[in-house]
Image (tube, rainbow, N blue to C red; front, top):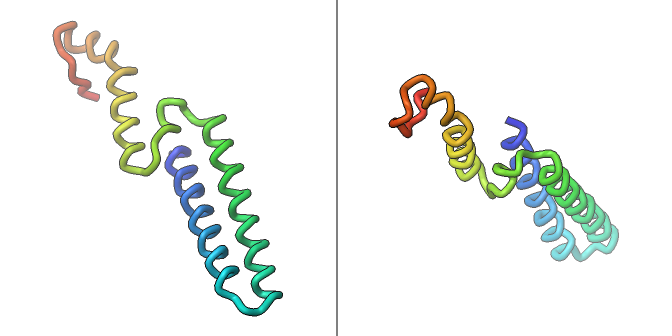
Length: 100
């Protein structure tokens, strides 16, 4: 679950950064443009910090996922590899499917 939440935050911070950048570039009022640039920089910083923390604390097999569906595939593959010993114990050495 933490991996999916990290991905959600990373994507959200990136989207907010881009939205504030668009507002900054389209504003003709210097004060509003300056505020929008500051907000864009804040979200860029949050995006970069969260991404770095995700890579640092997340399961290495999962941190390479770029979206939720890809994460689900990595989790399934990880479970199959990690639980293969349990499957062999329960169903014999000839099976390759995890029944858990």
